[in-house]
Amino acid sequence: MKVLVTGAGGHLGYNLLSALLAAGHTVRGSVRSLSDTAAVERLAALGPVEVVAATLESEPALRAAMDGMDAVVHTAAVYLLHAPGRDAEIVAASVDGVEKALRAARDARVGRVVLTSSVVTLPLTRPGALPVDEGHWAEDLRVPYFRAKTLAEKRAWELSRELGLDLVTVLPGAFAGPGFVRNTPSVDLVESIMKGAMELAAPPGAYPYVDVRDVAAAHVLALGPSAKGRYIAINDPIPSFAEIANEMHAIDRSIPRPKLTLPDFTLPLLPFLEGLNSRLTSAPRTMTPEMAATLRGRVFNATSARIRRELGWKPVITLRHSLADTITALRAQSQANAAARAVS
Image (cartoon, rainbow, N blue to C red; front, side, top):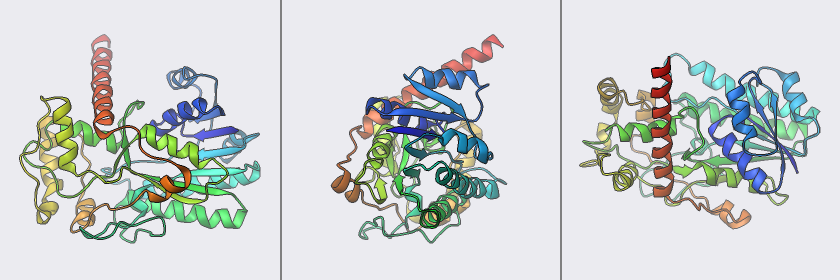
């Protein structure tokens, strides 16, 4: 199968190209500009990857990138959680990007479109409630990223019916693991724990962590002829913040483990405390007042039973393995940045 991956230079896009090549597909990856020689060379090093330039702002470029493709995997999106003043940009980029990508796919007569959505399109539940599945949709959209992903996926389903497209969506959790050149909010969480953000206490609740390589595998399966509808791709059960921090401490004893887990009523204080810690340690920020309000009294609680049952997917990268690889990648990135600063 000839497959185009949009956002090929991103964390998922890079790992997905590798997975598609391993599965025997012919792959094309789009990047924002071919003048970014480092990005082009990085993708070309994976194997026989055709790299093309296409941005979500340019419909003609998107259409040209899809020419001759059997399928498109649309991973390109703006993934930001703590970005003051950029709420409208985050939402518009996701919704407009989906609209342009799907219309280009229709014009190019692409047979299958796989869209990277997110578990944030699903409702959080009270602790102890039954897990939600693909039939549920989030209603609390006060977090801009949650709103962007939910509105974008809903628009994709509307357009797929209107344009006659064969659409499948994958709803991954927050993924980390190797293969990134810039931090995402999910990688930021790992870095912040490395820098002591949870040394005193871990936030309450669970974090829907999954390795990027397992997410890539889910997308490859979503290209198969039997795939239909939405598929949640997460670790089951979902680990807590404390479990993630404790696993990181087990990997490297220099990473502090939390002494306790905060009670739920402290959530409104976390953006302030995280901001203070960020100023002291330069740890990245991921918590906003909107996020704290959304999480209060609720937890991520979803099941990946459908994709396991219908497509045979299951995570093969353990939490500890994934976190260890993420820590290694972050430290290599920090060393490279330090070397670059020394040269300049």
